Length: 326
Image 1 (cartoon, rainbow, N blue to C red):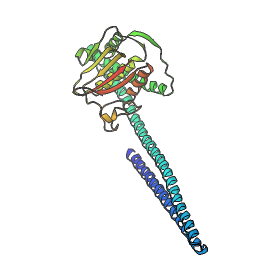
Image 2: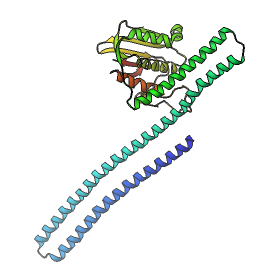
Image 3: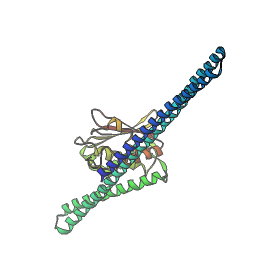
Image 4: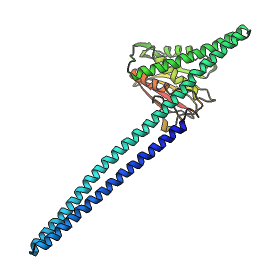
């Protein structure tokens, strides 16, 4: 299916470029013909003057006028033609960019459909397997508890995915409204981390460095989505080096919140696009990491709704650092 779509896109793009080249070539040829036609008319007029005017001085004056007229009309045709050509090239460039953007959006949506299908099926299949195992086998209480915990975690993952999709839909329609209140951000982040990432804290894979009593106006329902999406992203791309950090501190301009990892990092060319809806690096058929391309889009939207800004930079010696400033 993808090969067929790519073939159509490639053919349509080739036809468009051929059409553009043809239009430009035709326009240049029209300009040349106009100049030639103008010169031919003036030459014929000069021949008429030579046959009808006997006075040499008068003939010379009329020929000089014709030559000046010839130069002026040539400049006029070339000047107007050049302006028109520049406008034409500008329009062609806009069409080319729109065509490229459309193809990118189609690819991103196609990747999103592939990823969302996988993301929905995986927790459902895992939960079903745990329940079938519980039903068919006589297991110890400890084993039963382990399988139930796995099923609950997968259910929470599925619920989080659905929440992200619904939130993204509300954001597109500008239906999401903030209800902010003053909270101790240090305490709030600690509670979120312990509720969702207790095992990572206990293993040392997640470290918190939070300046105490940092107060901020936040939406208590929306802010956890900012933190969990950034942390999920950090763990997802950490690879073998699980070292995720959350730093919170007061700065001159307000509050700085950093989520950092030591994973594969982000290519410079992709740093401006990672916050776009559905955008994910590579193709859904070749990439190994799971995801829908909604997480960072939601993060940026919610951060800006809080009146903050978010940026990404390289970590040292490897990885990425997402910094939010309120």
